[in-house]
Amino acid sequence: MPLSRRGLLTTATAASLPACTGAATTKHRPRKLRTGFENLVAENYAPLTGKKVGLVTNPTGVTRDVRHIVDVMHADDRVNLTAVFGPEHGFRGTAQAGGSEGRYDDPATGLPVYDTYLKSGRPLADIFTASGVDTVVFDIQDVGARFYTYIWTLYDCMEAAQLAGKPFLVLDRPNPVTGRAALGPVLHEEFATFVGRQPIAQAHGMTVAELARLFNKEFLAAPVELDAVLMSGWKRSDFYDASGLPWVPPSPNMPTPDTALVYSGTCLFEGTNLSEGRGTTRPFELLGAEGIDRRWAAAAERLGLPGVHFREAYFAPTFSKFQGKTIGGAQIHVHDRAAYDPVRTGVALLVTAKKVWSGFTWRSDNWIDKLTGSTLVRTMIDAGADADEVVAGWQEDLAGFRRMRGKYLVYR
Image (cartoon, rainbow, N blue to C red; front, top):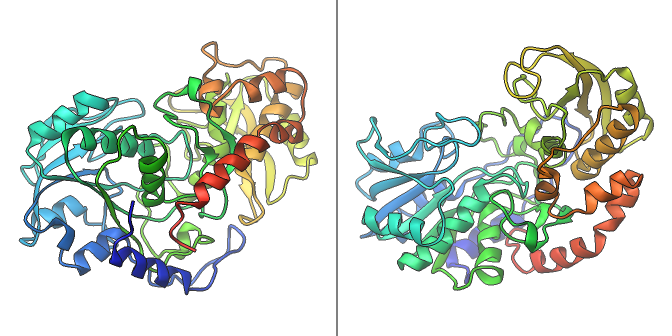
């Protein structure tokens, strides 16, 4: 994707600002970050002049005073918003994991809302065509993990826009867990699903605008006419609290930026018979099952993993695995975000859980392979490998992805 003049200017602004790092409890004085949407408004919606606009968004598409951008755009005579496209959980966020809101007219604006969840290719292109929009705009807050489905909504919508002959505009937002590095295993193509369409790293370390550039050049069969309005005031080392932006949960089980910090590692527990903390106030930070006691947290703590401590914990999920039962396990406490490696930590927790709890099993559908992108993690752990050996097993693939990723980074 060729960068527009506005993209080059906002990138230069981001590169000139100081780094912001520190422990999980450090408070930052937020610099003045402007999102892609804020920069779009500052340009009087110039890229959308004279076009019927369709917006792919969800509850995270808000201004810093938490007004939804659909409501803002609908009330602004400078832009002609004519349709909304909702992903998993829906545009207004009324659906749980694995659900969507369907086709309806938004009561607040009267705009038609179309469902994109689990739709791709020609069927999704036909929805774009039937909506009558001239251009498709994307604005959703990502959390930095390959298996978080919104980046594949981005991919599917880019592909469908190309098939429908519609230009595609991405409004960028921060990667809340920084854009410092890519971590973890890279998806093998034979394991492609909606939790991973293409071979990227488990923690990709990119913004959605950067991912869109990579998708367009590396993976789409035919590139879409792509543009992006970048952020200004964001640096790759920034965690979310440096942004000064409000946090709106991108999905019901992503309540805080702390959840996003651990998610790319502990979501792997979806592939086991342990609870990943759904149905608690700390999803993906609390992990456990019936029969687990203090020995698991103690075994994990003895590893001396950087940036994190583990506490024995007992909790009763209100839904999902072990609903209504009090179970034992561990809570993750990140004390140094800059040193913390979420993917290595997640693998270490899998290894120790299997060692200390005789009831440990993988899900029967081998969901773990779809989450990690290959059989490597599961088979190595089953063979008795420790966490460092498992991590070493994906380094060659990761090095290749990092080289490819470097071509598409626009914030320095």
